[in-house]
Image (cartoon, rainbow, N blue to C red; front, side, top):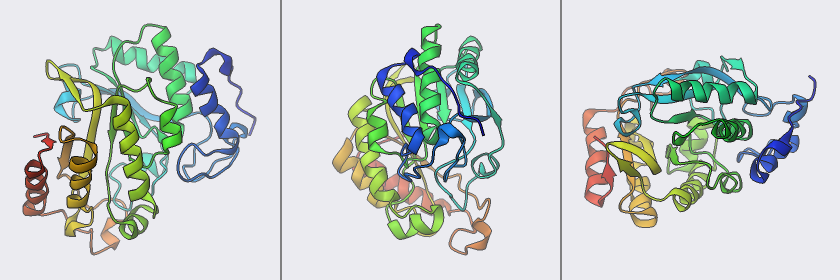
Length: 295
């Protein structure tokens, strides 16, 4: 494949560093070291430019992101995780989508703003962070004024996140697991818990607790935690970490919508929905610890 040519001089120094990083890619904790600028692909299966599966107002996100205009979601194809139960596996694993240039992606953001969306919600941006944030910077030069949401699976490199300081308004990471064996078995990432804790620390350092004005989030950390059956997510340990090491004002969405998708039916531990009591137990514990639990 031909080498991707982008005039990086048009962008800020942190974004130039992110782009150059793809020559031997270490953007995420996989550290594949393939030359994505020359068309090579690593674990995520995506080259230097992103593939977008959809872009539009989304009304199924958290209320503080949706408002009246919806969250302006841009779903990126590919992923740096292999979750057996992924509900968007056609996008994350089969990589359905259309490759966009940085200019085209920036234009999509401006279109979402014109449509009245409350924010620009970058869904699964970790592996395409360079191009995605270049598009954000370009869109801002052309009038984008909405908060930028970094909606991630939580398997993010601190070194990469540090280069985003000041560019992201709302970090919305998953905190999927507290046990390395479980994360290895279910998402092919045995270092997920360690990486995830460090990433969330850095995200909170940058943006602090979630700040809401007139019911709409404008800045801060919003954690998502999906309750898995049989306690596999390690909810108690994750809640303890947020309350004891991040902030008692941390906003968390305890998510109860798990259902066995993709390959989940092949594993008896995750081939059912969590019970109402499993979900309620996690919610009660988060409330008991003093966290800000979304309804």
